[in-house]
Length: 193
Image (cartoon, rainbow, N blue to C red; front, side):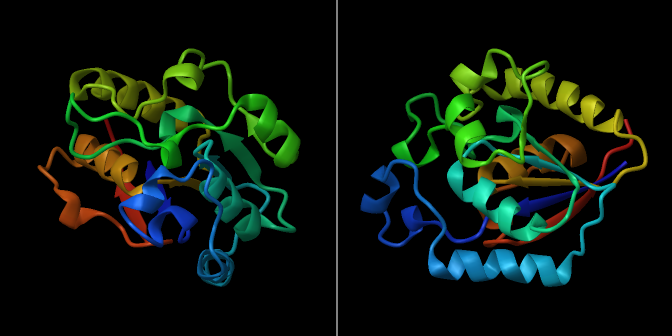
């Protein structure tokens, strides 16, 4: 199965690091909006494509702009929400990486489906500080779920640390922050387990 991981466009939380990381619910910047429009030019979506999107405003906005006027399946899941990479048990989730509530997503992004069956407890916890051993179990389950979409193209709109965590799990290679994708950067990954 081929997965295409795409990092969200530039968010307001990256404009004045480290202070801006304490911004709650940051949106895309003007540049981030343009990057999402560029995705639309580079990756034409069809009605049979599946987008799995992190429940954070900047990823939802990226997916919304990219998929505008396309009746593809848009699924919001905390299983691809922000994740610290590498993990450090002393770190806590920053305000910029807080997950939106299901009700807020339904209100602001009514065309998106909020996934609850597999995501259950992760809507409250998120995966940001999940220890690697637990993440590996979750990642395997998530990837098996992705297989259930059959031959549909699957795009995962997520975050640099999350993408790198899944990529490390899938490839078995040791990765670092140097492997992070850039804003609206993409990585094709084969998963054949």
